[in-house]
Length: 637
Image (cartoon, rainbow, N blue to C red; front, side, top):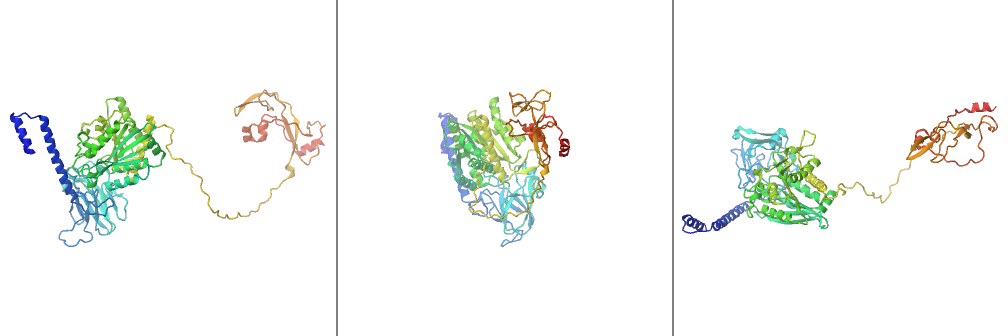
């Protein structure tokens, strides 16, 4: 085939024959395609032949990465034979593992070399390895000497993660034990040095740049996700070069009677950015939950989620590239069906969603993790159309309002030509104008809470929380755009059901008997009240409002609306021991005989609460001095 191409080219150059240029190009493309397939086949066979069994890591599925150390025991010089306790055994031949070489510097110091990405030797940052066969209280110094990205979060105080068999929870090494500096012993390159003390002999210790999220964990989570909710649909979107599955998860109800929008979420295009997988898992777990926001979102929005776009790179323990050494987030504008099968299938999916009139594509979110910035932030696009740009920045502003870890200083909107191959730049050029494309970045280290100068490191749970907050922000976004009505519930109900009674009542202890003494009652304190007429005072009527009703109150008068003033009765008292009053006396006291006619009394409840019943029924009544029973008896005599 190559000889024929050369022969055709010679004829064309000499002018002896006229060959169509397009035919020549098609022949060359076929030749290059066959060479490419041959290289891929050979490389895949080499990787499959290097399988190593390893079961010490919870992320392992008994396959090893290409070029990683496998059960490498470091012996001191001059020592041979069986390894003793304290001769460290390094291993990275497991899923997501990365450690290429180990050199013994001294009895306590080791130089560690990160394995570069496959077919891309300039990318070196991700590391993940285990150490065992340690001695009790053995102290060591590890130097990671070949980090390619010198501007990283280690300068901001980030430290590696460690866990062990007895302490399976990831913890960060204290900052006082970690140093990031230029080392004269290593050609003045940046070196990450950390000291560590092994506290148990039988434990296996694992060190990592960030929280690992493997391909096996991704498949296991999808298996569990489909059992939680009936609104979840899972299908295989594509297969990678090494025939690993790229799954598509669709979350949304089957209701067709209302208007709906489609939100596409892409994640883990870079294998070393494992926090993006935790954010994506937090988003999916929230969307399938029974939370009111999740239920509303499932009714009005359809989510198309691709949780892992680069499964080969994740499995091999690469930092940014695929098996072929390609950075997928720089290849969207030059997609090849054979080199980038995952991107080709994803672009075809998004173009089909954009043409669907029943449920059009509205938003594309690409999840990443950043190794040089803190907090949560967004990369967006700029447009010549001012109205399109204003619509584009609404979602980032809502994200800033509803999340505590958002960092507006790192948020950018640009048209950088060097980023033309990214998803947010390329997809906004081929999709409709109403489709917004974003890159959401979350730090691999930590964030600053609003109003606090202290940096808080991210944990697995806090990464899950970022995904849940993203769902809440989408709820507010579609409320603002009018897709979701504003009256729908967005918080779980606080009403609790009636507590069930106990089937058998427990016997109660009898109350203790207490002695109660009767209150003394004196007859002298009981008075009889008599009615007397008091002339009306000459003051004019005044009005007072009470509870929305106007009342005509004169001095010594209480009457309702439309009634005239009447003489206000007054009452005097006498002691029970005094003699009967004489009606003919000139004291003006009249004894009430028989039943008095019924009267309507209007009570001012404001005065009732302040001064009692007397003040409420006769506020403006003339005060008559009360006479003691002794003076009253003397007056009768």
